[in-house]
Image (cartoon, rainbow, N blue to C red; front, side, top):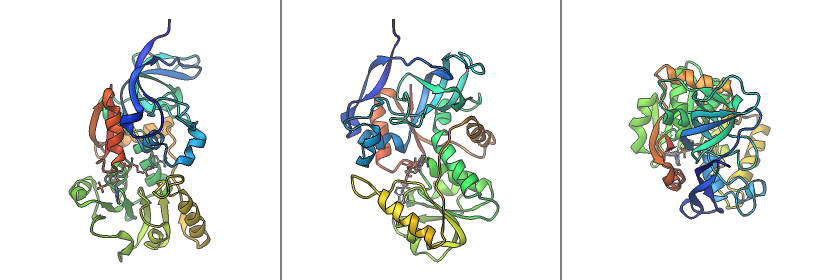
Length: 335
Ligand SMILES: NC(=O)c1ccc[n+]([C@@H]2O[C@H](COP(=O)([O-])OP(=O)(O)OC[C@H]3O[C@@H](n4cnc5c(N)ncnc54)[C@H](OP(=O)(O)O)[C@@H]3O)[C@@H](O)[C@H]2O)c1
């Protein structure tokens, strides 16, 4: 007899309320090297709303023309090991873990908007006891992306002048804290209502994007982490000091078919031709990166900001919240 679980299944592409439905499906079975996790929390990230809405449309060529081939969204994992597959020896039922079910294929894995998921064992780490499940879930994709950007791509250190566009969102709030902790001088771009919030996270300067355009300022920066891509990359890159690095970290906006992808590709080529350093960020949810994020959170100086937690049966509202592009920190779903 197969085990049944509750999961939020995607019926097509469109508005979250129209295409996401809480229903019962078969519980996944862990294969070799995989772990079955009973989820306590997951979080909503950009790939989730991109796959729910199916925009930019071109991505449907990979994910599925009428609906994603994998029906359950979500990749961040925080929960308790329920069973392990063949070959998994270092995790056992009952262990509290966090990590990622992302499997880098169309649809992204078994999905985590559900009571159970399977994840590769090498993408799961024992969760520090003092870290709440909701914060652990919020720390996976947002935390690793921010850490990779700040530590590896930008190599922020004492005195680095770093501008973070989109500083008050999931990735941005981690990036501000990590960069400030490394001694960087952070300029945060967000709306005025979030100015004091990002200052409290460590930003030295704040630019309110509703009244000021950072690409028209007089300051120059050693690095720009662009989580929004609402300006042309060339305009952003003009704000760099000599040898500065521009880090585009968004698909941006544009046509329904391609969003900002063509503009981004053209601009990246052009910037490289003019000698501007352009670097992208890849979120790799391996144990090493999970441990590095956990270590940062363990200092108490870096916090996973959770604006709101939604119960599983309100997953569509959680995705809609993200789609509003006004999330302050991370949006979590709890089971
Ligand atoms: N490289 C990777 O592997 C990877 C992984 C995950 C995510 N990402 C990318 O990282 C980016 C950020 O993700 P996220 O989860 O942090 O997004 P998010 O939480 O949805 O970002 C929401 C934030 O965007 C800010 N924002 C909206 N319009 C803005 C504008 N015009 N100027 C400045 N800020 C603006 C809002 O700030 P205000 O309300 O204060 O305006 C809000 O706090 C996404 O583009 C995503 O694709 C990349």
